[in-house]
Image (cartoon, rainbow, N blue to C red; front, side, top):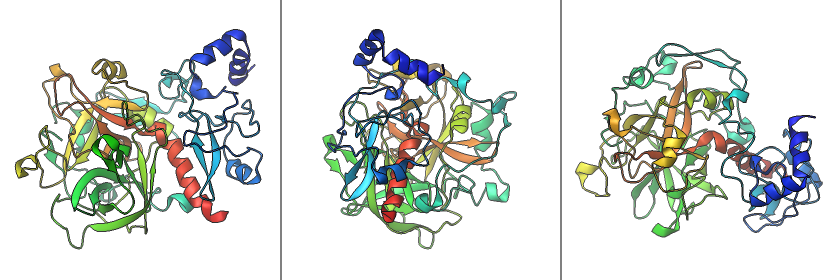
Length: 440
């Protein structure tokens, strides 16, 4: 009997049913209850509906998951749990169901159970990293995602010219390098960096990242955070691309684009811990890539497996405060884009550093009190990218989104980031829905 058959056999026993009542393990893959209404209050569509079958035909569904009538199910092992298709404003999309998942996956977690993944990487001496594996495959269809995935993460002024920036070696090989106390980023070193800008009154809001010529990625808290009366719409926000200087309009270099869609993760938890702190923005018109405007890659499972190791450093960029506590004084704000390199921290240390509930949809990074190094992202950096370079492909990947922290650069405290690999299925579903609505 295979793994999934064993799992479903357990779920059919008295012990298994009592276990499942507490919470749903394994992302709710074995859930076979009667819930048919989503977290957004929408009634699920029947799985047998022709339009639903069309949307599902290219998906890798687990055979043991029985798609009964219009019940919530998790046939593709989505890490956010059971879901279903719903009809909203005439369009068919997916929505998650309000079911409690177990905080820690009991049997199988594709990111924590690294031994279950196929061998792809070899780590050599020190911080130098070499990789053996298959050629890179795109995650999305250009029809819905837009252009840019083929050469994502390869900067026109650096990788495409066989150059490295001044601080790459620092990030990959040493621990002495050290956006509190950060450094000025080189022009063109983060061409995926985006500035979210408020239309009226005109002001800088948050960081974000360019993932294709149509899509922007940011933190949900940059869009929706009721405690601060924040609930922005497409009419409130512009995106500014190609920027280096924070306040100066860079004529002939930067591009300002309106957005026509904002999608916040339906299970974003602003009330408790900013779990699933992610939002997608769709630009009203595709942007043209330049030396200063170029998309970042999103991680596949093998890339995330390799890069997300304790002590490996990522790079955070932003125009946020240089010191803790918001103060509009010029001395606290950088004139140009800042960058800092921060090591990924063991998840158990992340959890023990705070009283906030930490989930597997987050990771933390920063220096320990005894490291004799300083540095952190700070207010204003939120929504920006945490990126790492994958030497096997000579590309940069976005591994996280700047989410939250308790102050800035405090001893024993770390910055927390949205775990982007765990969000890629949701991203794919959102983008597929946006493109698919044209065909119906």
